[in-house]
Image (cartoon, each protein chain N blue to C red):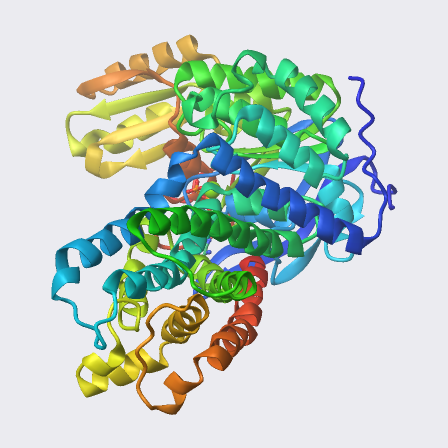
Length: 272
Length: 334
Ligand SMILES: Nc1ncnc2c1ncn2[C@@H]1O[C@H](COP(=O)(O)OP(=O)(O)OP(=O)(O)O)[C@@H](O)[C@H]1O
Ligand SMILES: [Mg+2]
């Protein structure tokens, strides 16, 4: 044996950052090893948007003669972010089920890095997802009429929503028993993504459903980015719809404030 | 650092762990000598994994104290983590990454820095005969290879103490042999190993000392030879034709052993551990004949693990009623 095995001595803040980067790196290696995972993960949003645009699109009238494709594409972006928490949850359960989480926990690494590494890694992954989706959208004919800054800010808002949902994903992932049970989370994700302004303006839904859809955080993000992209964004006169820009910032903040501590607590409770 | 522990790698006293109504550990004691291979033997649900999880800092005990690799489990948790390695009940490696990527990742997380993590990974791949498969995804590995990678991952800092939770469960005989060889290699380097197993044979093959655990308590402790003398040696088994002859068979068996025979009236069967197998067998046969007992079967058999537990605890491994008496390793509680 030749390698010197004495661990480096650094501050715990240093290790919190470096260990968390090692965890992010692990997520990035996944993309290198299995580039097709991206397509699998994006399969659902891509198929559904093709369905809506080409199958129902002709029958869709969102008012003012607006172009449905320009309306639906930002919706697809927002929906992908909304469903993203399932990827997080699934990865978390898989690590727990395979004992990888326990291996990390038995090591002298920074304990926070398991959670923070997942968080940053998944945001990076979501950025890759958005890049792929944006290219598909461009091919289909979607354009952003906003300035470069507005366009970038819109993508930031999308990632901001995804970031918030990571904590829900970790919290749920630690809560379910195994990967099979994680599949059932789709039953939560589906209405969360769909009962929103993603594919239809809430004003065109029955009153009660439209109300839920309006207050769905996904809707605020979808409306806000439509405005920023300069895409059609038919909104009603309700307060929540009028303040999409504000709420696209506030909702994720609120979700993070609630679920980040809950996720961390569940993680710590693994040792009970 | 506290090394004034009389050469013990693990000293646990009175560990208790409850999950709601289930008491997984019920005042469990354990001493593991430095440099030894210690087997923790017990049936399903005995509390082996719970004990390992507590000693490796994964869960906290409700009561009890422990010193692990010279560091106090509660006060010095990170120090314990630096000194131990853990290979859990399921090979805990990343399936999507390659073997090398796994080891490099763990090396970084053990704070070796990236270049030493790389060097260490190469060393371990070599040591565990994984160099050829190093850059393949772990998904393509066989069970034995996966287990070896798992062991290698636990060995990054060449820990003084390794915990292996059922390292060979679910492996075919070849994979089992590979893992045994890897464990022996560890021991040659001076690592202390605590391994749990459900198989008497495995404990016998690898361990210098065995602790038998049942229902969260230590019920026996000793070298394999000592335990086998108590419980695991050959035994004479007699099955009589008539239920009324069971008592006579019991007497015949009692005469050839220092231990009390186990009697199963329903199956008309009497079992007794013996030392001079052939002499004992002949003597039992002679006595049965003299007593005019009609025999369905008489022979020598190695005890199954179930019988070992029956003898140690007075209840079968899967029996749910608690044992009434204190365990009596020397005799029988029936
Ligand atoms: N997280 C948990 N929640 C509830 N009960 C648990 C939990 N973990 C273990 N138990 C219970 O504690 C007891 C001891 O379990 P443990 O896993 O330690 O046994 P084991 O000896 O490792 O068994 P096996 O050979 O099946 O691995 C069992 O009755 C088990 O059902
Ligand atoms: Mg177990």
